[in-house]
Image 1 (cartoon, rainbow, N blue to C red):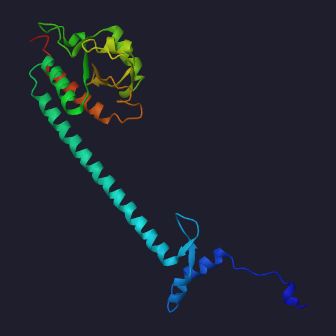
Image 2: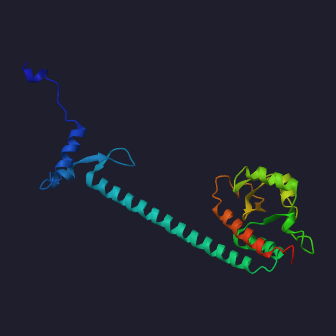
Length: 239
């Protein structure tokens, strides 16, 4: 028996082969027939397929993924444009309010019609309403100690937050809107403009409408707008 018969069969290291081919991209020039003979695992079924068919498959998948990503970007752009238009119309309507009650009522109407948010409350401290000839009209509410403590607890030290709203909290914080049979959800924002101006409550009977993971940038922005308008519309104690 010859020496060669006892020697173990030598195989090429796949990594070294891949490295060599990467350094010699012209290896298959003039060897097109070899390309047609190469077989690779089929990506979706058992067995193999030709290298060229696999390349066509991979290119098609990449094109489909690129098309899907483009459609996602376009959908996001369309959503952002629609959100901007709704927000613009909301702010313009709020700017036309002639008093704080009209401001609150306009807010409630706009949120219901443009954002499908059926329940809104504006809680303002008593000093903002002491000089008004009549009690505030819903959705404006006079902020008392009990409501202030509960709203602060729900915010948990944050400027704004989305959270669940129990039937008890709904009845207390949105007394002008019938409470749902189950827990709802809400978006809260603290209204401040150099000093506390109250709280904004936007609620839905759907417990998943306002989720804790949702971004609250819009809520804070709306709160900033409302705080400035409330300060402008509140009667002067010396008026």
